[in-house]
Image (tube, rainbow, N blue to C red; front, side, top):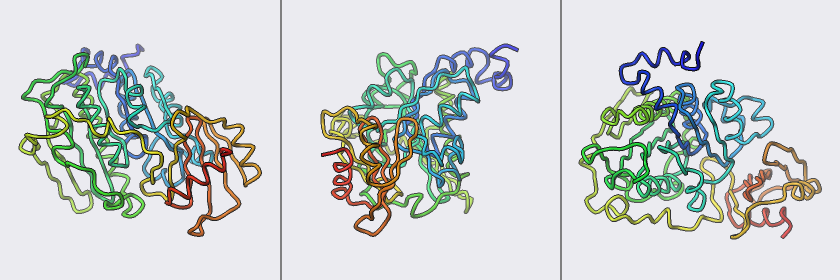
Length: 364
C-alpha cells in the first residue's frame, strides 16, 4: 500500500482527484485555537492529508473540555496537558505523514506574524472576539483566506473571508475580484463588549454544534487548498440544531464600501499592543502576561515557590499549582504557568488581583 492509498475514497471525488490530493499534501493551515472547533477541524484536515497543520492554543486540557473537544482524553485532563501538545500527539497517531507544529502560546499582535508565517489559510477555532478581529486584520493585510466559525448553546455559524484587497503577492491561494467577500468588520464593525454575549459556560454547548461548524470550515479549507475557489460557500451560514432552523445569508450585499479594514487598510487590532491581562471566556480565570520585554519564565524557580504555597503538578511545558488560599470571592485559587511567560490565575476575574498573584509567584 502506498501513502496515497489511504486517500483513495477521497481522491475518487471529482473535485479532488490525484491533483487535488497532491495540492492538499503541499498545503499548510494555521488553526487558531484548539478547543471544540479546532480539534474537530484539525482531525478532519489531518485525515484528509493536508501537509502541515500549525496548531496554536494558550490553554490546558480540563475535564469539562472532553464533552466536545475530540482529540483529548481523560489522561490529558488529569495531567493538565497543554491542548496544542495533546492535539499534536493524538494527530500523529491518526496520520504520521502530516507535519503538525504545536505552539502553546497566546495569539496576539506580536506573535501572529511568526506563528502563521508560510500558512496558506487561517481557520478560526477561537472562543473570543478580540483574537478573531486580530485574525481578520492579519488575513486581510497578508492576503490569505480566513475561515470564521463560532458555536454556543445549540447555534453555530461560519463564513469565509476572501479579502476584497485581493490575495497577497506570495499567497498560494488566489481568487478573482468576483470571488472576494466582505471581511468580518464589514458585517460586525466592532467586537461586542466583554460579557455581552453568551459563552459555553453561561449558555452551555451541544457537542454536535461545534462539530457541524468545524466540519463546514474544514470543507471550505479543502476546497481552497485544492484550488476550487469557486465552490467556496460565500455566505454567513447559521443554524440551530435544536430548533432545526438553518439560514444562509448572502454577504456580498453586506460589504461596507468604507470598511476601515478591507477597504481603507487600517489594521487597528493588528497594530495594537498585546493586552497584559485578559479575562478568559467562560472561565473564572484571568490570563496574565509577563512584563514587556520578558520572553519567558524559569518554571523550575516558579515550581520551588509554589511548593511553599500549595501543591504543584508538572506537565509538558507548564506547571499547575493549587494555592493554600482563597480568592477575594472565596473561591479556591490555582495557577497554570507556561514557559512563554504567561499564567492563568483561576479563582476570580479581577485582573488586579490576578496580577498580584502572578507577581508573588514569579518573585516580584
